[in-house]
Structure formats: C-alpha cells, structure tokens
Amino acid sequence: MIRCKMAIARLVACFVLYSSLGHIPSSLGVILRTTDKIVWANEFEPIELTCLIESISTNNPRIEWKKIKNGVPSYVYFQNKIAGDLENRAQLREPANILIFNATRSDTAEYRCEVAAIDDQRDFDEILISLAVRVKPVVPRCSVPEAVTVGTSTELRCLENEGFPAPQYRWFHNNEELPQDPKNSAKFANSSYSINPDTGGLKFRRVRKEDAGEYYCQAKNDAGHAQCPTQLMEVYDVDILGIFLKVFGAVVGFLCLAVSICHSFRRGCFHKKGHNENNYNWPAQNSGVEYGDADEGHFRHKSSFVI
Ligand SMILES: *[C@@H]1O[C@H](CO)[C@@H](O)[C@H](O)[C@H]1NC(C)=O
Ligand SMILES: *[C@@H]1O[C@H](CO)[C@@H](O)[C@H](O)[C@H]1NC(C)=O
Image (spheres, helix red, strand yellow):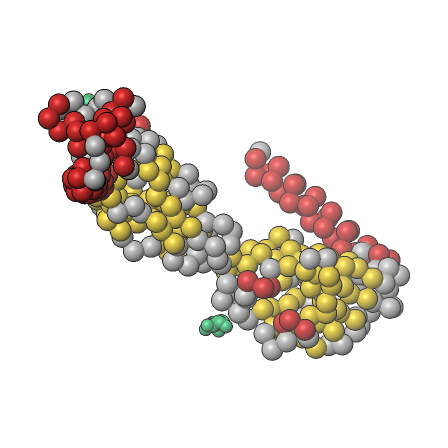
C-alpha cells in the first residue's frame, strides 16, 4: 500500500515538474534566482555569490554586478569585465555568479546581479545579495589590577575592536574558565564576580583572597578567537599602600610640628630679652589654652603672639 502511494506521489510530482518546465521559457522571460540572499564569508577565504538564471531565451544577455555600500552603488562587473573594488580579485562564473578569491572585510556590502535579455518578453531581472565578511578577533586589550584589598570591589576589563561580528568575551582564572554565573559552580560559588560577555567586564563586588591569581580574557566570534597574555592580580588583607601613606603623612606632620615648635622656641627666647613682662603676658589671655604646662607657658604664649 505505502509503496503504491509513494509511486503515485512521485508520478504526480514528475508531471507537475514536467508541465511547469514546459511552460516557462519564452513566455515569462528572464528570471534570476540565488541560493543565498544573505551570505556569510570568512575573511581571507574565497566566496561565491550565486546569480542563477532560471529561464532565458536571449543568447547573450547583458550581465552586470553592482556593489552597494552605504547606499552608494558602484560597478564590480561591467562590460564583461570585473571592475572597481573587485578588480583582479574575482571572476565571473557560469551562469552569472561572482567568485571572490580572497574576501576582505571591506567586501561587506550588498551586491546586485542584473541581467538584461533583449530578446525576452520580460527583458530584465535583478537579484540582491547581502554579503557579510567575518573578521577574526585580534588580541584583546586587557586591564587587570595588580593589587587589590580584600573586601573591596574591582573590575577587570577586556576589549577587542576588530572582530566582526562583535566578539563574546570569556575570562580565565589560573587557566580555568570562569563560569558565567559563579552560583552554578561548586568551585566559584563563594566568589562575588559577574561577567558581561558582551562588554568584556569581569566585576568583583567583594574581592576574596581566593580571587588572587593569573587572569586572561578571550575574545571569540564565528571567525575565530584571540586572547590577551595572563596578568597577575594580587589580593592583600589590608591596604598596604594606604597604611604606608597614612604613616608617611603622620611622620611628615609630626616633623613639621616639631620644626615649627623649635622655631618658635628660638624666636620666643630672642624676643624675651627686648620686652618687659607686661608685654608678653598680654597675649596669654587670647590664646595658648591648649598648652597646659605652666612652666613653659611663658614662651609658648609669647610664641603664639609672635607667630
Ligand atoms: C588573502 O589576502 C591576505 C591579505 O591581503 C593575504 O595575507 C592572504 O595570504 C591571502 N590569502 C590567500 C588564500 O590568497
Ligand atoms: C563557601 O562558603 C561556605 C560557607 O562559608 C563554606 O562552607 C564552603 O566550603 C565554601 N566553598 C568554597 C568552594 O570555598
């Protein structure tokens, strides 16, 4: 039964095909077809844009190809010759296909195949094909902080500008890929990072000791991938630089104070000789409360007046 049905179906199909073939030629004129209206190619590889002629009666139709980039058309096949951007880089293949030997990123554009057949009733047809050339990412630029403090937030960045389509980013920690979401991994469950695969950012909300180590990033698209060299991120318990700066600041402050005190002592001693008691008691009423020592009070009160 099944075999019988299939045989009948095949017969019907054959008949439909035969009758349609018998009708097309001279009555409809030139008709074009392509296998792909949207074509992806890899850079530095050959690619063929197909322009198939379904039906035609004219013997020597006029074939032209135009490249349309940013709305501006230019000839790439004209008067039976490859021209313009594709000169010496392509050839026409039967029936009207164009073969680019070595695609480059600048070939990304729309291409229009136009066939004019003067002896046909319908004497013109055209077909538009859009070509996108994939470009392998180059080595991304990565920025990894050399040292961060436990508990602070930080961001590692990765950027690549050549790849087409725009690459997706992945981060590796000590040669192991960081899962997109740390919660899904037993090993990284306690880490506070988040990865944005579109922008290349690796953000830590609170850095842990365990987050220290070697990092690199990979940029990947359909044409290939590239990665930056590993960089070391160290994680400190405390902010050593901050503490150093504070200590340094305190020492400098103390020295300044000491120098100014010494200085005023000397000036105080010097002026003491030339003034009477009344003169140098007077400023004591306005200032010097912070200097508690009674014995040294003379000089200090005096000095605050002088300064
Ligand atoms: C394609 O072109 C590039 C750059 O112009 C060149 O380096 C490469 O060798 C070419 N590839 C082939 C297969 O000709
Ligand atoms: C994550 O933290 C919990 C609780 O502090 C701990 O028991 C567990 O061992 C940690 N996991 C890892 C992989 O460090």
